[in-house]
Image (cartoon, rainbow over all chains, first blue to last red; front, side):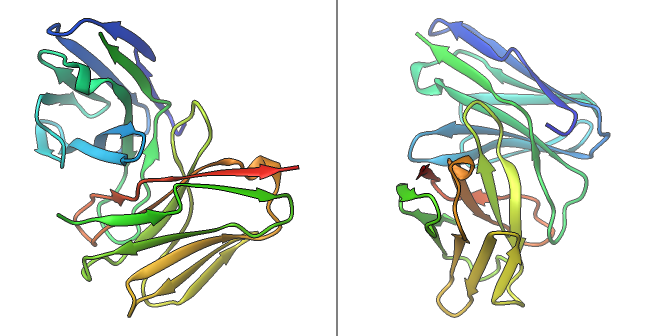
Length: 114
Length: 112
């Protein structure tokens, strides 16, 4: 998985609780992304980062926030988890933003919100 | 809303068959079209990609066909094997924007 780890790999939580997912890379890639994967929807971009402290929203950012204080770490926070946020979350990295960029994905975090 | 529409949602073929997965896009500014392969419990991995200046690209048993005028592209898997059973995603992006727009995914099962 191209030097990408995600933690935790599985989490069960209750509605209304805060949840933080961590993505850690050892590739020193500049760009990092958070996606959620749901049946029938493919992969949808939540937030992404161009570099340290430089982030932007994706297509499904409501209810999520991110932070990137170091090149290697990108955190995704659900401030108050809801059942609609039950999903599989993937982190991805890339080393350039241009024509033909390849994104490398982590192993995913399976989140269940009860 | 920029979209990439993928079909079929699921596909079952016999070993040696040629499954074909189709994608259509709307934004004519897209200029990079990758396909990702995902096995159960794993993250997606880049399989093959094409740019709109060519109509076809082959890598091993995998071929992308691209029709710019129709805004469609497809993945063909020659001599499919049970090990090709996976979920396949098409995607599209625009140079310099760094954001991939994914299709809904196709779950492929190759029967022995």
